[in-house]
Image 1 (cartoon, rainbow, N blue to C red):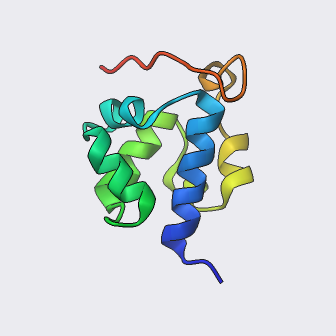
Image 2 (cartoon, rainbow, N blue to C red):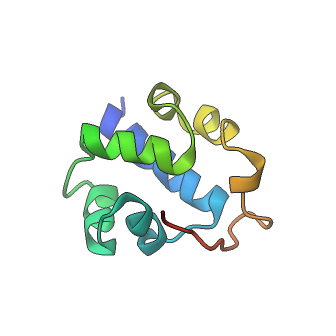
Length: 95
C-alpha cells in the first residue's frame, strides 16, 4: 500500500501535467527552487504542512481535496487553470 506522501507526490505530478507546469513553474508559485521541488517529488525530502497550504493556494484546491487522490484533485482544478493541451505548457504568474 502506498503512503500518504507517495499519493501526494502522484497528485502533484498529475496537477502539474494537467496545468502544463514544470518543476521550476511550481517552485516559483510555492517560493521554492526547482531543486527543492525535485527533491520533494522524488521522495528525498518531504512536503510540509506549509507546502500543502501553498499548494492549495497555488492550485485553488482545498487541502483535503489534495489528499483525496489524483482523480479527485485534478477534477477540482478550475477550468482556467488547465492547460489548453494536456501535457502542454502554461505560464504561471506569481503575485
